[in-house]
Image (cartoon, rainbow, N blue to C red; front, side, top):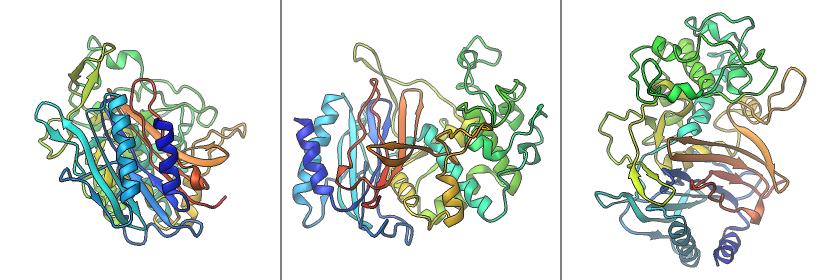
Length: 405
């Protein structure tokens, strides 16, 4: 039954370039988003009209533009069916065509205890999708000559200890820097200082103390090794290059030019209006509140929150070179290679692959039991489809597609 509804949805959206945005939160609360893109940032891609699909709503009822009633009804049925099938307490959806919202509505709750509806204003953890936000800020700085992607990261982060080999910012953006990822002891409360997720961080030294003293896993450039701590260094490099805080730079290079209204650093102790509650779901289906998580050590690589609309604007801006600029746009979406010349499948932050023969650029993430994904795809035409839930966590994505090859 759901498959039939998906096919109907694809027919309704066919013939246009498509942008799809979804963030999945706590395996239970889902958002993603689409809204009117920033002026001039979403021109027609490969000559096709633009369609953005994502998750978000103002909670005040469902809006349907004239002429979109049938598609909206089918979309609502599909979303509600999937929400019930996967036990998702809250879900919201918004669809934009040519910069105009044609459908927007909420389904279920974002806060189970208070009975708060999932909303267009709700803020969700981006988890590792924060990496592509940081990557875009770095790319914009590089385009203006304010950050040298091929410089030794120690030029910008002198607190990072000298290693046997130079580690460049570009390598860190592509997980080629040899910096480790998480280890089991990082999250053990028995570790001195406790779990990295529950510590308080006062200085950069507190953050670097987690990983900076560890040996590199490999010579930089020799092997792909995914690392959130590598992106922590990218964030610190941005700060060193500009003399500003990371989120100030993100504000200037990402938030302001794209008109992102709520994207911000996740500070769990702050009172943040419309931030979703996060939940865990046990093997027996029991839902509980998630525990405390402080992402201060990984703001650049997994410590941001945003609304669905914000991520829709962000994703749509990466469908064409206008926002990043022609030269750096190509670098961002071109796979880096190892020293042996093997493609890694990752450019500047974004992962690169193919689905049904079409190039797809994406990134996913998880923080505790919250998940998110973002991606850009070209040439899907009428075969655009929603990303499927997986492994008990509701997965999602942001996809921008055009009718071109």
